[in-house]
Length: 383
Image (cartoon, rainbow, N blue to C red; front, side):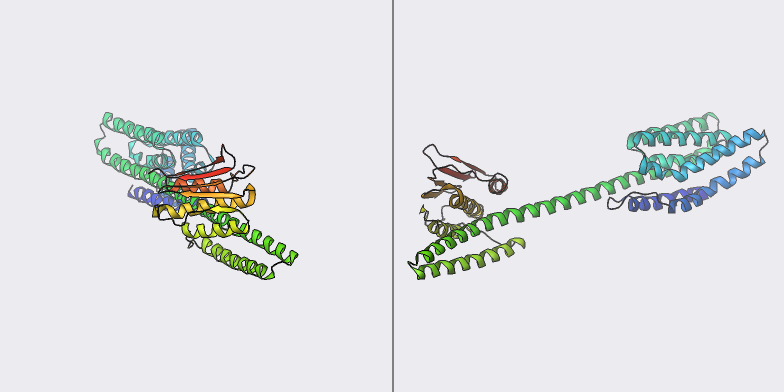
């Protein structure tokens, strides 16, 4: 019976690889037809002697026909069991494997404990195809029953064969666990890759919103100022200056977009203060801004730079304010205006982006109307 043992070991190694390959999520699961060829080869050590023994046995024709039927159905179940892995749910797989174990015991009843190796085909599939609980119940139960039969019948010489069956069954059980672990790891890796892509998309969208929103707002305000100057023909030199600044802002915005896409762009709170001063002056909004950012923790200056950029952009766009005050401390930043109508930061864009940025450093951002009128945005990180 050594050929049977070798066949089952080869079955385990081949099917472990074939099942993993055929069940990748990137393509539809389908029946591994190569298995029909190899499975038939694995069955030959059982089927050929079985057919010979049944043919040579004495007894009625109907008994032989029944024995042939059991052998045929047992072999067919072995060849077709991949369909249970692909198409059947757990309950159907449990019923299938239970029926196959029952057929294996029928073979033992027909041929005696000399056919103990025939159980390998059923117990190996059980260990591979079912979850831990049902697999242990069927496999361990069958092996214990076989042990009892051998000891009760005094066939102690068969204990060595039973040990081999137990070892092969245990190996197939571990193969099944290994395949499930590999599939879980592959699924986890795909989920991680999807999350990385989603996070990168959110980062690019958030950065582009922050950069282009501020830059285009400033460009729009300056272009409008230049247009009004040209229409009035009052100070053409000032209009030319404004247009040159618009050109510079456009070039800077283009550079920022390129750096953002490649994740090389760095935001500086001091640079954003300078940009805010330019934008507010162009919008003819009086600004009370700090002259230095030394009071702010270095680790927070980049995050607060984004907050300042977004808040000033919304002041210029929506507030109708005439005065803006920016105050900052070691772990906080506040931008307040005196707009006649409270403006809301778009929850799907600016505010959500700021909340995400502050959450990365353990802080929060609050935006709302002031009791004395106007609007205030405050970002703070607990010290």
